[in-house]
Image (cartoon, rainbow, N blue to C red):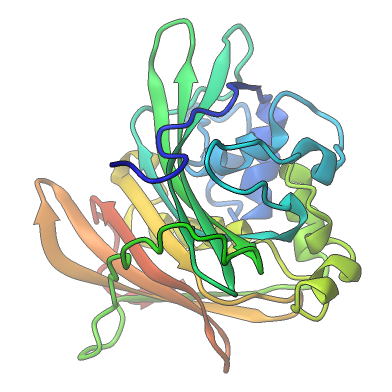
Length: 309
């Protein structure tokens, strides 16, 4: 028997974007001037950074700032409690890249179609909601990306639901040095820039929500770290060509604050699925905890095998 809520489909969300949105996203995750195909709209190979769809369920169909809490109003899922969307953080994300996104949605109807895969009661810490979202061209039926998201509703457990099974871990090798190391020095302004992509959660702009959730104040979007790390992998191993990455995932292990330095370490495993090599990675706050764990990508590794960006 499927668990409570499994198979429930959310209302379809129409999403849209302009070339300007694509440029802003690339700038906000650390793309550099030697990657003009992400940063200059007249470049002959101008294209969308592959993880851009991660912001579209927040941005949806608007070009203006939105009231995040109002926009994220709880949807009633049959058989499970109504959760407070002001107390939710990312748990883990996995995204498959099925078809390149056009540089603008103009002239198309693009839909985010989301369904529930599972709802898991973790007791006093909270509840995990696992969903799958496909980004679909409603006219042609083309699916651009398929993403699985685990959202963690802080302190909203103990409702008698299933505990769920343990997720599979993809630990990095412990017996050798990484094949790539790259880093970024964040600032208090890092989340204030990233939020302009459409993720206007006050948790990433003003200290009050973070204090209530036990984070001590403003934290940087987990998806900033997620997208920044993807850029580093693609730049180092895939010569910044989106065609060289098939899928990508990471678990959000601990919060990051403005001013933290992020250090990513990545290993080629030599394990292949056809032409796609498995790459594992983790991201730490320098001198502190891992903030992205369970990092895994499948890539065509055509860049240098070792080095530091």
